[in-house]
Length: 72
Image: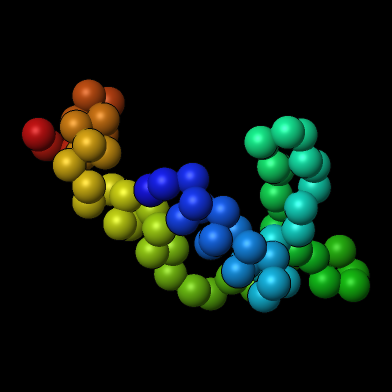
């Protein structure tokens, strides 16, 4: 993924209230999961498609093969 794609995805998540910007230092932003009024994490029942798609990419499959997570 490009930096622009990650920035766009994180901006959408911030707009939807899923994550909150914790710290901003030059080009490195730190986000945390949003919490409700009682300090409890907001329910995340969705599917994490970003990581699923990353795991399917040829480059990530090679990395996972090095660590023994998938067969080469």
